Image: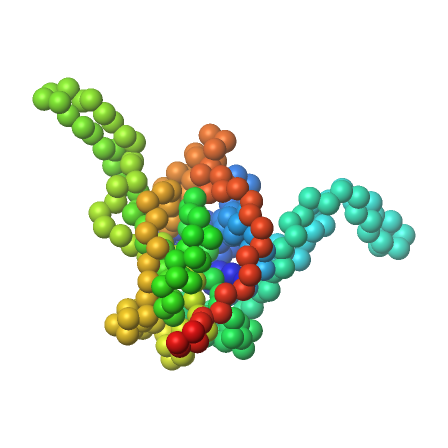
Length: 271
Protein backbone atom coordinates (compact mmCIF):
# COMPACT_ATOMS: atom_id res chain seq x y z
CA UNK A 1 0.00 0.00 0.00
CA UNK A 2 1.39 3.40 -0.97
CA UNK A 3 1.73 6.29 1.46
CA UNK A 4 1.13 9.79 0.10
CA UNK A 5 2.86 12.57 2.03
CA UNK A 6 1.82 16.20 1.52
CA UNK A 7 5.14 18.02 1.31
CA UNK A 8 4.49 21.03 -0.92
CA UNK A 9 3.37 23.90 1.33
CA UNK A 10 5.27 27.10 2.11
CA UNK A 11 5.71 26.47 5.85
CA UNK A 12 5.26 30.15 6.64
CA UNK A 13 4.75 29.65 10.38
CA UNK A 14 8.25 28.14 10.53
CA UNK A 15 9.77 30.84 8.34
CA UNK A 16 12.93 30.92 10.45
CA UNK A 17 13.82 27.57 8.87
CA UNK A 18 11.93 27.53 5.57
CA UNK A 19 13.53 30.37 3.64
CA UNK A 20 15.72 27.93 1.74
CA UNK A 21 14.08 24.54 2.27
CA UNK A 22 10.51 23.17 2.44
CA UNK A 23 9.22 22.47 5.96
CA UNK A 24 9.37 18.66 5.64
CA UNK A 25 13.13 19.03 5.14
CA UNK A 26 13.67 20.86 8.43
CA UNK A 27 15.92 18.63 10.51
CA UNK A 28 15.39 16.92 13.85
CA UNK A 29 18.42 15.00 15.04
CA UNK A 30 20.24 15.70 11.78
CA UNK A 31 17.49 14.12 9.64
CA UNK A 32 14.59 15.80 7.82
CA UNK A 33 11.11 15.59 9.31
CA UNK A 34 10.17 13.77 6.12
CA UNK A 35 12.69 11.03 6.88
CA UNK A 36 11.28 10.59 10.38
CA UNK A 37 7.73 10.26 9.03
CA UNK A 38 8.79 7.74 6.42
CA UNK A 39 10.65 5.77 9.09
CA UNK A 40 7.40 5.51 11.06
CA UNK A 41 5.63 3.91 8.11
CA UNK A 42 8.59 1.73 7.16
CA UNK A 43 8.78 0.29 10.67
CA UNK A 44 5.23 -0.94 10.15
CA UNK A 45 6.17 -2.52 6.84
CA UNK A 46 5.11 0.23 4.41
CA UNK A 47 8.01 1.32 2.26
CA UNK A 48 6.53 2.81 -0.91
CA UNK A 49 5.95 6.56 -0.79
CA UNK A 50 4.42 9.18 -3.06
CA UNK A 51 5.62 12.68 -2.21
CA UNK A 52 3.34 15.55 -3.28
CA UNK A 53 5.88 18.33 -3.70
CA UNK A 54 5.61 22.03 -4.46
CA UNK A 55 7.61 24.74 -2.68
CA UNK A 56 11.33 24.22 -3.36
CA UNK A 57 10.58 20.71 -4.55
CA UNK A 58 14.10 20.27 -5.95
CA UNK A 59 15.49 20.17 -2.38
CA UNK A 60 13.50 17.01 -1.65
CA UNK A 61 14.42 15.43 -4.98
CA UNK A 62 18.08 16.15 -4.48
CA UNK A 63 18.03 14.62 -1.00
CA UNK A 64 16.60 11.31 -2.19
CA UNK A 65 18.66 11.22 -5.37
CA UNK A 66 21.77 11.39 -3.22
CA UNK A 67 20.52 9.31 -0.29
CA UNK A 68 21.97 5.98 -1.41
CA UNK A 69 25.40 7.47 -2.09
CA UNK A 70 25.50 9.54 1.08
CA UNK A 71 24.83 6.47 3.23
CA UNK A 72 27.78 4.53 1.82
CA UNK A 73 31.53 4.46 2.12
CA UNK A 74 32.71 5.22 -1.41
CA UNK A 75 35.76 5.11 -3.64
CA UNK A 76 36.03 7.56 -6.53
CA UNK A 77 38.33 7.04 -9.52
CA UNK A 78 39.09 10.63 -10.45
CA UNK A 79 40.46 9.66 -13.85
CA UNK A 80 37.16 8.15 -14.98
CA UNK A 81 34.60 9.46 -12.48
CA UNK A 82 33.65 5.91 -11.55
CA UNK A 83 32.15 5.54 -8.09
CA UNK A 84 32.17 2.32 -6.09
CA UNK A 85 30.09 1.94 -2.95
CA UNK A 86 31.27 -0.31 -0.12
CA UNK A 87 28.87 -0.06 2.80
CA UNK A 88 25.15 0.37 2.33
CA UNK A 89 23.01 1.72 5.17
CA UNK A 90 20.34 3.22 2.91
CA UNK A 91 16.70 2.36 3.48
CA UNK A 92 14.99 -0.09 1.15
CA UNK A 93 12.29 2.43 0.24
CA UNK A 94 10.67 3.19 -3.10
CA UNK A 95 10.07 6.94 -3.34
CA UNK A 96 8.00 8.60 -6.08
CA UNK A 97 8.32 12.39 -6.22
CA UNK A 98 5.88 14.64 -8.07
CA UNK A 99 5.74 18.40 -8.43
CA UNK A 100 2.08 19.14 -7.63
CA UNK A 101 2.36 22.90 -8.07
CA UNK A 102 3.48 25.87 -6.04
CA UNK A 103 0.06 27.29 -5.08
CA UNK A 104 -1.97 24.07 -5.11
CA UNK A 105 -4.09 23.39 -2.03
CA UNK A 106 -3.91 20.18 0.01
CA UNK A 107 -6.82 18.45 -1.71
CA UNK A 108 -5.66 19.64 -5.10
CA UNK A 109 -2.26 18.04 -4.56
CA UNK A 110 -3.91 14.68 -4.04
CA UNK A 111 -6.06 15.25 -7.12
CA UNK A 112 -2.97 15.79 -9.23
CA UNK A 113 -1.84 12.28 -8.27
CA UNK A 114 -5.06 10.67 -9.50
CA UNK A 115 -3.52 8.79 -12.42
CA UNK A 116 -0.66 7.52 -10.26
CA UNK A 117 -2.84 6.34 -7.37
CA UNK A 118 -5.12 4.25 -9.58
CA UNK A 119 -7.78 2.05 -7.97
CA UNK A 120 -5.94 1.02 -4.81
CA UNK A 121 -6.49 2.00 -1.20
CA UNK A 122 -3.76 4.42 -0.12
CA UNK A 123 -2.53 6.15 3.01
CA UNK A 124 -2.08 9.89 3.42
CA UNK A 125 -0.39 12.12 5.95
CA UNK A 126 1.16 15.55 6.36
CA UNK A 127 4.87 16.30 6.12
CA UNK A 128 5.19 17.75 9.61
CA UNK A 129 3.57 15.40 12.16
CA UNK A 130 5.27 12.73 14.30
CA UNK A 131 3.50 10.14 16.43
CA UNK A 132 3.77 6.72 18.05
CA UNK A 133 0.54 5.69 16.34
CA UNK A 134 -0.10 2.06 15.41
CA UNK A 135 -0.59 2.50 11.67
CA UNK A 136 -1.77 -1.08 11.26
CA UNK A 137 -4.58 -0.40 13.76
CA UNK A 138 -5.75 2.56 11.66
CA UNK A 139 -5.88 0.31 8.60
CA UNK A 140 -7.81 -2.35 10.45
CA UNK A 141 -10.40 0.19 11.63
CA UNK A 142 -10.70 1.53 8.09
CA UNK A 143 -11.26 -1.96 6.75
CA UNK A 144 -13.78 -2.79 9.47
CA UNK A 145 -15.83 0.41 9.09
CA UNK A 146 -15.90 0.24 5.29
CA UNK A 147 -16.14 3.98 4.63
CA UNK A 148 -14.31 5.97 1.98
CA UNK A 149 -11.94 7.67 4.41
CA UNK A 150 -10.45 7.25 7.87
CA UNK A 151 -8.56 9.99 9.66
CA UNK A 152 -6.63 9.83 12.92
CA UNK A 153 -8.02 11.98 15.72
CA UNK A 154 -5.43 13.16 18.23
CA UNK A 155 -5.28 15.34 21.30
CA UNK A 156 -2.67 18.08 20.80
CA UNK A 157 -0.11 18.71 23.55
CA UNK A 158 -1.14 21.33 26.07
CA UNK A 159 0.83 24.56 25.93
CA UNK A 160 1.47 24.68 29.66
CA UNK A 161 2.28 22.26 32.48
CA UNK A 162 -0.52 20.53 34.39
CA UNK A 163 -0.79 20.99 38.17
CA UNK A 164 -2.79 18.91 40.68
CA UNK A 165 -3.42 20.48 44.11
CA UNK A 166 -4.22 19.13 47.56
CA UNK A 167 -5.12 22.36 49.32
CA UNK A 168 -2.09 24.58 48.84
CA UNK A 169 0.25 21.66 48.16
CA UNK A 170 1.16 20.62 44.62
CA UNK A 171 0.86 16.83 44.59
CA UNK A 172 1.50 16.35 40.87
CA UNK A 173 3.10 18.39 38.11
CA UNK A 174 3.22 17.26 34.51
CA UNK A 175 5.24 19.21 31.99
CA UNK A 176 3.06 19.95 28.96
CA UNK A 177 0.85 16.85 29.19
CA UNK A 178 -0.96 15.43 26.16
CA UNK A 179 -4.31 16.77 27.41
CA UNK A 180 -5.32 19.08 24.63
CA UNK A 181 -8.90 20.30 24.56
CA UNK A 182 -10.86 18.11 22.22
CA UNK A 183 -9.82 16.08 19.21
CA UNK A 184 -8.18 17.34 16.02
CA UNK A 185 -7.20 15.76 12.73
CA UNK A 186 -3.66 14.50 13.17
CA UNK A 187 -3.21 13.05 9.69
CA UNK A 188 -2.30 9.35 9.26
CA UNK A 189 -5.29 8.70 7.02
CA UNK A 190 -6.43 5.74 4.96
CA UNK A 191 -8.38 6.59 1.82
CA UNK A 192 -10.24 4.78 -0.91
CA UNK A 193 -9.85 6.00 -4.52
CA UNK A 194 -13.46 7.22 -4.38
CA UNK A 195 -12.22 10.13 -2.25
CA UNK A 196 -10.63 11.55 -5.39
CA UNK A 197 -14.13 12.23 -6.74
CA UNK A 198 -14.58 14.79 -3.94
CA UNK A 199 -11.66 16.86 -5.24
CA UNK A 200 -12.75 19.60 -7.64
CA UNK A 201 -9.38 21.00 -8.68
CA UNK A 202 -6.22 22.73 -7.46
CA UNK A 203 -8.20 25.01 -5.14
CA UNK A 204 -9.73 22.08 -3.26
CA UNK A 205 -8.75 22.08 0.42
CA UNK A 206 -8.61 18.59 1.92
CA UNK A 207 -9.77 19.69 5.36
CA UNK A 208 -12.79 21.60 4.08
CA UNK A 209 -14.14 20.73 0.67
CA UNK A 210 -13.15 17.06 0.97
CA UNK A 211 -13.29 15.86 4.59
CA UNK A 212 -16.31 18.00 5.49
CA UNK A 213 -18.26 16.62 2.54
CA UNK A 214 -17.20 13.06 3.34
CA UNK A 215 -18.46 13.51 6.90
CA UNK A 216 -21.77 14.93 5.63
CA UNK A 217 -22.16 11.89 3.38
CA UNK A 218 -21.45 9.44 6.20
CA UNK A 219 -18.20 8.34 4.57
CA UNK A 220 -15.67 9.42 7.21
CA UNK A 221 -14.35 7.36 10.13
CA UNK A 222 -11.83 8.33 12.81
CA UNK A 223 -9.25 6.33 14.70
CA UNK A 224 -8.82 7.89 18.15
CA UNK A 225 -5.17 8.00 19.18
CA UNK A 226 -4.47 8.84 22.82
CA UNK A 227 -0.71 8.44 22.56
CA UNK A 228 2.08 10.74 21.47
CA UNK A 229 1.53 13.21 18.65
CA UNK A 230 3.35 16.42 17.81
CA UNK A 231 3.29 18.58 14.72
CA UNK A 232 6.19 20.84 13.82
CA UNK A 233 4.40 24.08 13.07
CA UNK A 234 6.58 26.64 14.86
CA UNK A 235 10.14 27.11 16.06
CA UNK A 236 9.00 26.13 19.55
CA UNK A 237 7.60 22.86 18.20
CA UNK A 238 10.92 22.18 16.51
CA UNK A 239 12.81 22.88 19.74
CA UNK A 240 10.50 20.48 21.57
CA UNK A 241 11.07 17.70 19.05
CA UNK A 242 14.83 18.22 19.10
CA UNK A 243 14.89 18.05 22.92
CA UNK A 244 12.99 14.76 22.82
CA UNK A 245 15.41 13.41 20.23
CA UNK A 246 18.39 14.48 22.33
CA UNK A 247 17.04 12.49 25.29
CA UNK A 248 17.47 9.37 23.16
CA UNK A 249 13.93 8.02 23.37
CA UNK A 250 11.81 9.65 20.64
CA UNK A 251 8.40 7.96 20.86
CA UNK A 252 7.81 8.13 17.11
CA UNK A 253 10.73 5.72 16.65
CA UNK A 254 9.46 3.21 19.19
CA UNK A 255 7.06 1.18 17.04
CA UNK A 256 8.37 -2.33 16.34
CA UNK A 257 8.95 -3.42 12.78
CA UNK A 258 6.12 -5.40 11.18
CA UNK A 259 5.69 -7.53 8.05
CA UNK A 260 4.17 -6.13 4.92
CA UNK A 261 0.37 -6.09 4.89
CA UNK A 262 -1.72 -6.95 1.83
CA UNK A 263 -3.24 -4.17 -0.24
CA UNK A 264 -6.75 -3.44 0.94
CA UNK A 265 -9.55 -2.79 -1.49
CA UNK A 266 -12.99 -1.64 -0.53
CA UNK A 267 -15.44 -4.50 -0.50
CA UNK A 268 -18.18 -4.36 -3.08
CA UNK A 269 -21.65 -3.58 -1.81
CA UNK A 270 -23.25 -6.68 -0.34
CA UNK A 271 -19.93 -8.56 -0.16
